[in-house]
Image (cartoon, rainbow, N blue to C red; front, side, top):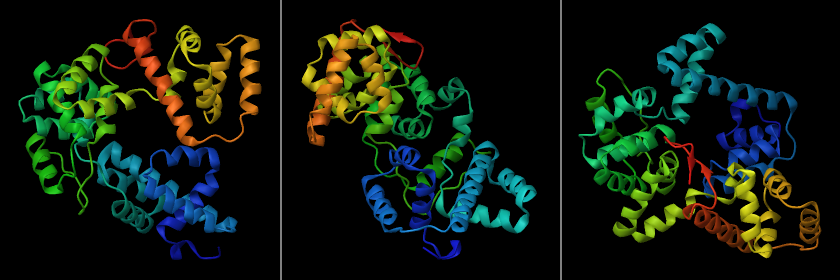
Length: 337
């Protein structure tokens, strides 16, 4: 690849960036992309034969500048970002960076709410319509959203959670109107396209920030209102890789209860961190046996691995429900029993 930086497409720049960052960091980035984005980006990466070191440095520098600009915008708005960037790179380059940023990245709405105390936000929104509350909470940080959801009247909690999970695209005009009502002195920049927010993952992240009692109340209510939605949310509340947040006693309890074949399959493609913490909570002989058996397993179907991991997650949640193990959680309770 001998093109100059300016002649490259956005996908090509992204491919060069990920190649430069290496497989471990790139794998982490992939977790935040959609399947379609991963497919397109992987195809672009596979088409790159060789990257000139100078071009690589240019792409990394551009990424660094945009990342700095985004950080400055988050801290103090576009005006603050422009002032800092002008001092660092000069007026022309600062203008170029801001233009690239505003054309490719969205400044998230409700910035004032994310910077405010959760109690202040609660006082501000609790009299609003549940759909309005759901929209606002879906834009907040999960921990902050969880605190506010926990503090809402109980009869509102499940309704708001359901609305977050089933929320569709929201027009920028509506978002702007709500923002102006909530905070007249804060301006927000939204894209021309409809903004995708909410969804099941959004409500999962919010529920992960509430205490266990509130979570149960909301999920019990959702079971009545929308059983399929409640089941899908439960599946995503704790994933297999989260086993690393369990204490040693809990992992040992899981190891005693789990089907050995499920555990071998689940660990087959698990991260080294997960494997290490599980093996550390086995006897030396058992751990060695597991490692040897996994080596002789050969290739396994991804579907079989995912099903095994799902069964283990189900076991962990059942053990938590009956008080056999504890899981560190967000919200007011550090430990849930």
